[in-house]
Image (cartoon, each protein chain N blue to C red):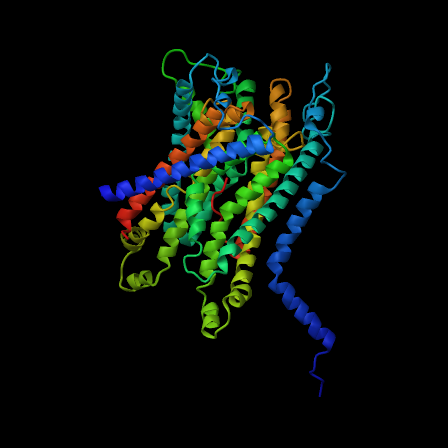
Length: 285
Length: 293
């Protein structure tokens, strides 16, 4: 087990480092080659202190990233937790009721919501908050000083919802299709003829055999969830890593761009590593 | 005894009818596309409209809330928001169609660089690069590229083409691999036909057929991404629903319809395009796209 884990970790680290190099080149190419800036990424003077618009109070980079990443973890946890729970739960249910085309029906609300631009949805929430609730709408307009901070959960949920919907729809359909492919194999007909019950065939045989395929879908939607979070966070003025990246790009603040990008790459890399380790145990060799 | 031979005209007519029946899905799907695109693109030139001018607020704004004459209300300058939104969606859809097409062409080009090689592991470098490269969300790459380059439409389009192309190339590689396992291809190898001949004659047409579905599915996704980039101000001062919502954010209390209404039309158009894309993908057997953005 240790060998498998270390091998996957080494692979993840190598990928993460190569991604860091790519990020380095991307920033240089975008800002200096195409954008015409003379602040090259290798010059020390290109890396100044945290600009005032990124933080209300003067703060260091470490504190800034710490605050932003904890806020983003909350939103990401809600969004990706929702994708995993809904995607797997409803996907398995959809496969169980495949004769009623349940995959399309169960994914339909999420697919419809995926057509709503995420930035517009969070602006609508802000409008509703202003007009109907008569209270500040965007995430940076009210701070809870004492007591449980339910507002932080509300803001994170608003940001997470548009990121979750398209990924959940994709996950439901993908999980269902993997199990349905397994259910269309000849051995299923044989089990029917042998007198096995529906539930026994599905949960005891089809689902059990489809587990490695289902697990391989675990990290597929994570990059798109993170990508959607960037836009939604910035639109809702939610102070997370996504809005840090966008604001850093607008201000030309390289450390913010690198740290934001590497943070996201690390999360995706860790999820991929977890999936690979799980696959090694479920499908050795 | 009656002459049972059918005339040439009748034969051709029957053949034509049979052909139309064969492609009935294409015909039925082309009609709503045609209607939607005609509605979006009808009217004068739209690329010259600058949202900064359209959404500037004069000292005495003349905006009107949505009513029967102006479904989406008007801007502070009195311009009809519905017409502006329609033109903005026309822009976004035009950008999405061009970038999706070129992105697919790029993916096909990249895949064909490896596909004609005889080695069984010829796509391996592509898969290795894609596994490492997809650690960074595509949206991050686009934001850094378009924002760092100053934010203009050509740069955003270039970014979208490259990102879509690089993400689709491994998918096409898998399709090529699947296509080569078909019995007709194996028979071709058995008969001694050359690899390029078999690929060009048997595998490429199958892949191209599925690409129609990919294109139809990609367009609504790219519309959403383009709007998101314009919302963040990374596509220059150009009319787009994203930019309109961004400008509308400045007057949420006085005129909330400025931010709310353009998104309504954008949602409706994306929903129609997604539905049509799903139907096209189903008709062509393309399967679902990987989550790119």
